Image (tube, rainbow, N blue to C red):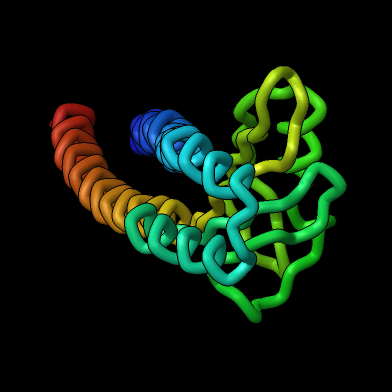
Length: 193
Protein backbone atom coordinates (compact mmCIF):
# COMPACT_ATOMS: atom_id res chain seq x y z
CA UNK A 1 0.00 0.00 0.00
CA UNK A 2 2.82 2.36 0.83
CA UNK A 3 4.27 1.68 -2.64
CA UNK A 4 1.01 2.68 -4.24
CA UNK A 5 0.89 5.93 -2.25
CA UNK A 6 4.46 6.88 -3.22
CA UNK A 7 3.84 5.97 -6.85
CA UNK A 8 0.61 8.02 -6.92
CA UNK A 9 2.37 11.06 -5.46
CA UNK A 10 5.15 10.75 -8.04
CA UNK A 11 2.66 10.32 -10.91
CA UNK A 12 0.76 13.39 -9.73
CA UNK A 13 4.01 15.39 -9.66
CA UNK A 14 4.78 14.34 -13.24
CA UNK A 15 1.27 15.32 -14.36
CA UNK A 16 1.59 18.74 -12.72
CA UNK A 17 4.94 19.34 -14.43
CA UNK A 18 3.41 18.34 -17.78
CA UNK A 19 0.44 20.68 -17.31
CA UNK A 20 2.74 23.46 -16.12
CA UNK A 21 5.06 23.24 -19.15
CA UNK A 22 3.04 22.39 -22.27
CA UNK A 23 0.07 24.81 -22.41
CA UNK A 24 2.09 27.93 -21.50
CA UNK A 25 4.77 26.90 -24.00
CA UNK A 26 2.25 26.79 -26.83
CA UNK A 27 0.78 30.13 -25.79
CA UNK A 28 4.22 31.78 -25.57
CA UNK A 29 5.35 30.43 -28.95
CA UNK A 30 2.10 31.51 -30.61
CA UNK A 31 2.35 34.97 -29.05
CA UNK A 32 5.96 35.31 -30.28
CA UNK A 33 4.95 34.31 -33.81
CA UNK A 34 2.01 36.73 -33.82
CA UNK A 35 4.24 39.51 -32.49
CA UNK A 36 6.76 38.85 -35.25
CA UNK A 37 4.04 38.92 -37.92
CA UNK A 38 2.69 42.15 -36.41
CA UNK A 39 6.14 43.72 -36.54
CA UNK A 40 6.47 42.84 -40.23
CA UNK A 41 2.97 44.17 -40.99
CA UNK A 42 3.73 47.48 -39.26
CA UNK A 43 7.15 47.70 -40.92
CA UNK A 44 5.83 47.18 -44.46
CA UNK A 45 2.53 49.07 -44.20
CA UNK A 46 3.93 52.57 -44.71
CA UNK A 47 5.99 51.77 -47.79
CA UNK A 48 3.17 49.69 -49.27
CA UNK A 49 0.72 52.53 -48.71
CA UNK A 50 3.06 55.05 -50.33
CA UNK A 51 3.35 52.92 -53.47
CA UNK A 52 -0.36 51.99 -53.40
CA UNK A 53 -1.41 55.62 -52.98
CA UNK A 54 0.75 56.65 -55.97
CA UNK A 55 -1.31 54.32 -58.17
CA UNK A 56 1.19 51.48 -58.60
CA UNK A 57 0.07 48.70 -60.90
CA UNK A 58 -1.17 45.40 -59.45
CA UNK A 59 1.85 43.69 -61.01
CA UNK A 60 4.23 46.03 -59.17
CA UNK A 61 2.33 45.54 -55.91
CA UNK A 62 2.52 41.75 -56.36
CA UNK A 63 6.29 41.99 -56.86
CA UNK A 64 6.63 44.23 -53.81
CA UNK A 65 4.62 41.83 -51.65
CA UNK A 66 6.73 38.92 -52.94
CA UNK A 67 9.92 40.74 -51.96
CA UNK A 68 8.59 41.51 -48.48
CA UNK A 69 7.20 37.99 -48.10
CA UNK A 70 10.63 36.49 -48.74
CA UNK A 71 12.11 38.69 -46.02
CA UNK A 72 9.34 37.84 -43.56
CA UNK A 73 8.97 34.16 -44.45
CA UNK A 74 5.24 34.75 -44.76
CA UNK A 75 2.43 35.44 -47.20
CA UNK A 76 1.58 39.10 -47.66
CA UNK A 77 -1.71 40.35 -49.04
CA UNK A 78 -3.08 43.80 -49.73
CA UNK A 79 -6.84 44.29 -49.67
CA UNK A 80 -8.74 47.47 -50.35
CA UNK A 81 -11.18 48.81 -47.77
CA UNK A 82 -14.02 46.86 -49.44
CA UNK A 83 -12.18 43.58 -48.96
CA UNK A 84 -11.11 43.08 -52.57
CA UNK A 85 -7.70 41.53 -53.14
CA UNK A 86 -5.29 44.09 -54.58
CA UNK A 87 -1.99 42.17 -54.36
CA UNK A 88 -0.77 38.80 -53.12
CA UNK A 89 2.75 37.50 -52.65
CA UNK A 90 1.42 34.07 -53.63
CA UNK A 91 -0.37 35.21 -56.77
CA UNK A 92 -2.58 32.48 -58.12
CA UNK A 93 -3.07 30.78 -54.77
CA UNK A 94 -6.61 30.44 -53.46
CA UNK A 95 -7.99 33.52 -51.74
CA UNK A 96 -11.21 33.92 -49.82
CA UNK A 97 -11.96 37.09 -47.92
CA UNK A 98 -13.67 35.04 -45.21
CA UNK A 99 -10.34 33.39 -44.39
CA UNK A 100 -9.00 36.75 -43.19
CA UNK A 101 -11.35 38.17 -40.54
CA UNK A 102 -8.32 39.93 -39.09
CA UNK A 103 -8.55 42.37 -42.02
CA UNK A 104 -12.07 43.49 -41.09
CA UNK A 105 -11.00 43.89 -37.46
CA UNK A 106 -8.00 46.02 -38.42
CA UNK A 107 -10.11 48.24 -40.67
CA UNK A 108 -12.92 48.71 -38.17
CA UNK A 109 -10.60 49.29 -35.20
CA UNK A 110 -8.07 51.28 -37.27
CA UNK A 111 -5.09 49.60 -35.65
CA UNK A 112 -2.78 46.60 -35.91
CA UNK A 113 -4.58 43.35 -35.07
CA UNK A 114 -2.99 39.91 -34.64
CA UNK A 115 -4.78 36.59 -34.23
CA UNK A 116 -4.65 32.96 -35.19
CA UNK A 117 -7.24 31.44 -37.52
CA UNK A 118 -7.97 28.08 -39.11
CA UNK A 119 -7.84 28.09 -42.90
CA UNK A 120 -8.45 24.84 -44.77
CA UNK A 121 -7.68 22.79 -41.66
CA UNK A 122 -4.38 24.54 -40.85
CA UNK A 123 -3.79 27.12 -38.15
CA UNK A 124 -2.31 30.39 -39.35
CA UNK A 125 -0.96 33.38 -37.50
CA UNK A 126 -2.22 36.62 -39.01
CA UNK A 127 -1.42 40.27 -38.58
CA UNK A 128 -3.29 43.07 -40.31
CA UNK A 129 -2.66 46.79 -40.27
CA UNK A 130 -4.84 49.38 -41.98
CA UNK A 131 -3.24 51.70 -44.51
CA UNK A 132 -4.46 55.18 -45.32
CA UNK A 133 -4.01 58.82 -44.46
CA UNK A 134 -5.91 61.59 -42.77
CA UNK A 135 -8.14 59.23 -40.83
CA UNK A 136 -9.42 57.41 -43.94
CA UNK A 137 -8.60 53.77 -44.53
CA UNK A 138 -7.66 52.85 -48.09
CA UNK A 139 -6.94 49.21 -47.40
CA UNK A 140 -5.18 46.72 -45.21
CA UNK A 141 -1.86 44.85 -45.30
CA UNK A 142 -2.05 41.27 -44.06
CA UNK A 143 0.99 39.20 -43.10
CA UNK A 144 0.20 35.54 -42.50
CA UNK A 145 2.16 32.34 -41.90
CA UNK A 146 1.23 28.84 -40.80
CA UNK A 147 1.77 28.00 -37.15
CA UNK A 148 3.06 24.54 -38.05
CA UNK A 149 6.45 25.26 -36.46
CA UNK A 150 4.73 26.13 -33.17
CA UNK A 151 2.63 22.98 -33.30
CA UNK A 152 5.62 20.77 -34.16
CA UNK A 153 7.71 22.28 -31.34
CA UNK A 154 4.92 21.69 -28.83
CA UNK A 155 4.44 18.12 -30.12
CA UNK A 156 8.18 17.47 -29.73
CA UNK A 157 8.15 18.78 -26.16
CA UNK A 158 5.04 16.69 -25.39
CA UNK A 159 6.74 13.56 -26.76
CA UNK A 160 9.94 14.21 -24.83
CA UNK A 161 8.04 14.89 -21.60
CA UNK A 162 5.95 11.76 -22.10
CA UNK A 163 9.03 9.59 -22.65
CA UNK A 164 10.84 11.15 -19.69
CA UNK A 165 7.74 10.70 -17.52
CA UNK A 166 7.37 7.05 -18.57
CA UNK A 167 11.02 6.34 -17.78
CA UNK A 168 10.85 8.22 -14.47
CA UNK A 169 7.62 6.48 -13.46
CA UNK A 170 9.06 3.08 -14.36
CA UNK A 171 12.24 3.74 -12.38
CA UNK A 172 10.26 5.07 -9.42
CA UNK A 173 7.97 2.05 -9.49
CA UNK A 174 10.97 -0.28 -9.53
CA UNK A 175 12.66 1.66 -6.70
CA UNK A 176 9.47 1.74 -4.64
CA UNK A 177 8.94 -1.99 -5.19
CA UNK A 178 12.55 -2.70 -4.16
CA UNK A 179 12.25 -0.55 -1.02
CA UNK A 180 8.90 -2.05 -0.03
CA UNK A 181 10.18 -5.59 -0.71
CA UNK A 182 13.27 -4.93 1.48
CA UNK A 183 11.21 -3.34 4.25
CA UNK A 184 8.66 -6.16 4.02
CA UNK A 185 11.38 -8.79 4.47
CA UNK A 186 12.77 -6.97 7.52
CA UNK A 187 9.32 -6.66 9.06
CA UNK A 188 8.66 -10.36 8.48
CA UNK A 189 12.00 -11.24 10.09
CA UNK A 190 11.17 -9.06 13.09
CA UNK A 191 7.73 -10.66 13.37
CA UNK A 192 9.24 -14.19 13.14
CA UNK A 193 12.25 -13.41 15.27
